[in-house]
Length: 542
Image (cartoon, rainbow, N blue to C red; front, side, top):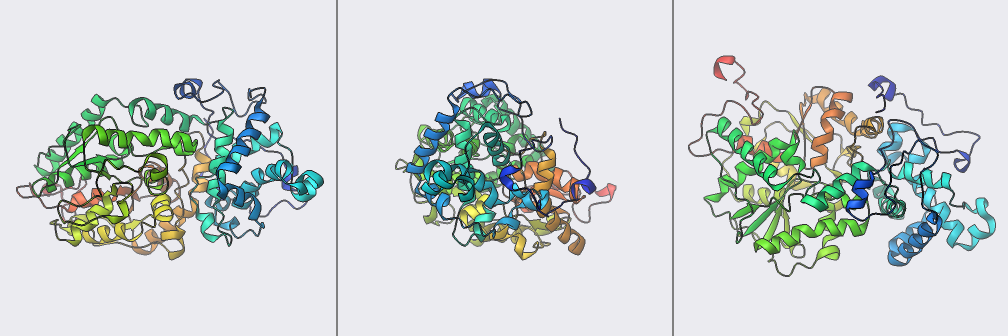
């Protein structure tokens, strides 16, 4: 495990590029704290991925297959033919640098190869040498180079210093989506067994048990039962969730992190409370202990693996005979659903166009995928006065909202979360406008980077987001960062402790549940975390 630097050391960033040495002549330096461990052979074997073996990125010999160059070349050609966008992105970049200072990893590290333009250039330079006349004739003068072992190592090192957040693409005058280049680059390295275990293990687990953590169905049920007890202790209400019930109208799928990792567990308790509240109004919903993961780490491996893992949701919907699917608060879950699901696994003609059984609202945006975002569903409930809410129960919180990259930039899902938060919370403050909505900064740990051994990279990549939170903390006294992504909920507590201090992390539906007023409930004196509500701080009242 790498020794993590202090915040003061991490904040010393040099953004001045080297004056004499060109980037092609600067060898890759794989540093502790910046990379994730290589994929374990048992995890690669579990899903049939190539070249399973124990390997260490810091060692000289990466144990590549003998024909690795041919495998990469064949894979490159295939993807150039298959993805027209990839071919365009290889050809049209003019290296203007408009994206350079938009990447949180470049801002936080000062490493020129973390400029999106240069990260893509690592791959584009090999493309020029292999597939363009100018590159073949003029080589380095045309920005071209051969694919050597050292270049391959450079690819791997920097491809996994990108969270595929797509902030760079927002500012590119040509519309180049550098995240798509990163995704293809990762696919190429995965063809010869260059993976990270923080991605390979969740992929293997999800393929085996239906969720990233490898949790068996009985353990999933045990956690739900634990939440039921906790909710009853706080509210006096005994919720009655349905699991694996055939014939239900709606199947609910959420990221497994909400079931097994704080503070997402409180968000999961919020889901349970909301569904119980709505049962008397006609909500007919069930959870699955088999399709127990909305997220998709396969997306960080290859399009094929993403499709393979994504299929479980439709398969379970068909097995249970539901009409449509409701999805929880997750980031890359919704990027895959919104942009790829119809192509990967659709059209889901056996399901119906989602219609809220409570308001009659048709979710026409889900006509193809048959899946609705829970925040959108809840916003519709609030708009139609279907929830009795007491926002003063969140008055002990001063809240800001992080636009998770995939729902925000990947879906344009911007206003619904704010609508819900403002309905359940009296103290909401936006971060600076250039750091939110479409221009939101990333958590710095997405796309499979939320490991422990790369903590320095994570803290550097999360610095821009942390600075924006620190601003609203100092200006407005913000003490809670809300988000609609399970990875955000998992990684932000460490980031806040490192850069900001005294700011908690919550999902939106935890606050919804705090504000929900049930008939026959006990007088609420604490929130779902057992923290006293505003005015209840006196021990005699708690």
